[in-house]
Image 1 (cartoon, rainbow, N blue to C red):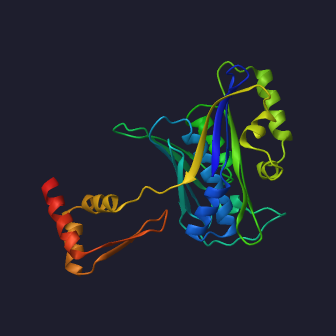
Image 2 (cartoon, rainbow, N blue to C red):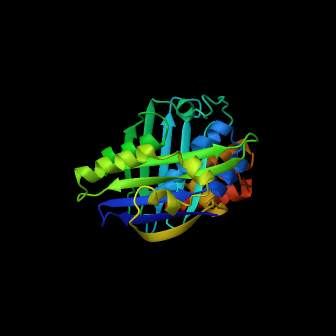
Image 3 (cartoon, rainbow, N blue to C red):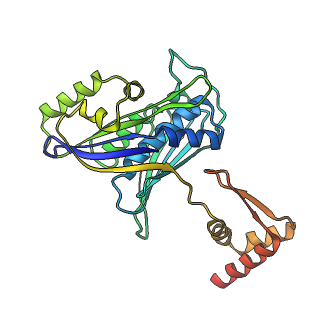
Length: 290
C-alpha cells in the first residue's frame, strides 16, 4: 500500500506534496488490462490526483484528461480517505518506447483539455479546466494549477513499467509557491528541480516520498501522511439511482425491449445484473419522483 505526504517548506513559503502509489497503479493495470503506455499515463494521473486529494478533509477530486491522442480520455479520482480509482477510454493502445521512454504525450495528445472537479459536499462542485499544453500530464497539471487555481506549481510524475507490463515504480511530487516566497527562492527551487533525477529513478533507488522532497527542501515540516489504496465506490444502489435518473421514457423503452440489463463499472469492472422485475420497480420510483 502506498502513501502521500503534504507539508510546508521555507517557513511556509512553499507547500509540498509527494506520493508513492505503485500498488494502486498495478491494481488498476490488471483490472483494466492496460497496455504499457496506457499504464504510464493512467499511473501519472493517479499520482497527480492523490496529491490533489490529500488536501481534502472530506469529499473527492476528479481529474479528467481528454486529448486527441489514441487514449482519448483518462479519468482519475481520489477522495479524502485515500481511495483512488481510474479508467481510460482506450486501454489497449500500443505505442513503442521512444529513446527508452513510453511516449505518454503522444498517447494523450496535445490538443484537448485537462479539468479538475472538487466535490466538497456542497450543492455544486468546484470545477476548472485548461487546454492541454503537452499531454505529459505533469506539465499540464502544473499549468492548470497555475492558471486556473492561480497557485504557481511545479509537478513531477513518473511510472516505470517492466518488460512484462507490470508496474515497477509509480509516484510523484508537487511544490506550490505561496505569496511570501521570494524571487530568489523561486529561482533556487527551479534549479533544484531541474537538477533532480526522474521520479522513477529516485523511487528505484529507495527514495520515499519524504526523501524526494528533502532533495529540494531539507527543512520541511510534514503535516500529514495518508495511505492510498485502490477502492471503487460503485454499488448496486448507485447503479439503480443512475437508472432512475434516466427518467420514465428511458426505463419504459428498456422494458419494451424485454431484456434484463448487464451494467459494468468502468473503474473496477464489476458487473451488475438488473432484472426486468427490478427495472419495473425503478420505473415506479422514477414516476414517484416526477
